[in-house]
Length: 524
Image (cartoon, rainbow, N blue to C red; front, top):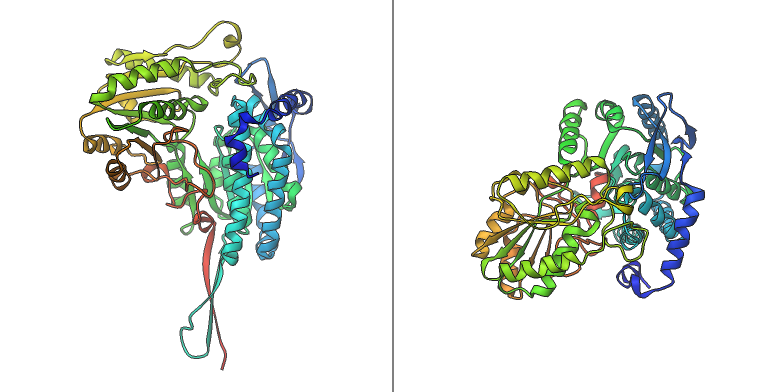
């Protein structure tokens, strides 16, 4: 049974629940509350700058662990070690690297319940989303192993260009890549960037966000246990500000792969391109402000389900989450009545419990932003149709819990319509024509995911041909803008949502980590 099928039928397989729940208990003694080193060239490294403490957003009394406050010196040393190992790793037969990647997929599958339990404690995801993240990582590794094989390691005969010439194109890696990953998919997004660099022959210095370093450590161990040599992959922790100067200015850094905010991504882009001695690749995925359009020809029930899942899954803390909703005037009231009804049935609470859909947001800053955005909306004429409250009492006092929130009647030019909120806040607007809806949907600097609900094929085609977003969906009740899967949907950001035009999960992603070399032999 494929991973994707298993994910879709998760709750039909009753055996998964006791296995996950056992892992929740096992993780307590095996991982939680421990002191963790960094790893450079396979050696444990403890920082002279001390440690930082990470607590669970689910329950602040739970200490996930203590992690090192790395600094520029650690980054410099890791890059140096990665450079030393580059030649041997890049010259290894690509088939051997594929074998290692496939072994990593096997290990993730074997460890999925343990990994998912850590994701729940650390990032606050419910079991469905945590396990799905593991399965997605497995499928991504298998998919790109197949892509390498289908492209013969990106080697092919060319030409000839002239008499007696034997011409060949080979793709070669760049060198040392620094991979910086976010909290919202702490395992899968890091997995995608690291895999892309490693399978193509690059070496990697990996720095997970300080919100989810333990998930990153488990991924580091997977790759190392699968056979990635100690000098090829390094694991550093600590605040990004401690590393940034070294990352952008070190001439031995060949490329950067970053997923996170537009503010940080654009700063890295500008600094890296201006500080290096020549152009070098930088892969950026920087979030979005994703729209869903519902026309008067939509299946309302299907659209409601798709919007609720896309807007409020993992608390809207996905770069693909629906945050803007455009509903045609004739069906707006009916649709919103159903939307509020469905949202009111969302179960909020401790994500370790099976029935919970919406767990906590990631930290105290997210809660304060939530309060500020809701107050801003009320002040500026917005009508809160549902939600708007920070939850308190009982288990809610232990972590960071807020209500899913639907807001109508804000003016279109309002800042909340423009900036990425990364919270379970959905803004509603109405339209009269599909052309108007597309104009408003495209009126953003971002361009990651977008969706439409309409049973009219002409409307759907108009949407596909005119929307300025990289990942587009029609009539998807599983998530109107969310849920891309490796080998099915290329996850690529346009405009301020991305930098390469080549999406993870698609056939061209590995080319981001490679450069072509033309080889010509003349035989007289």
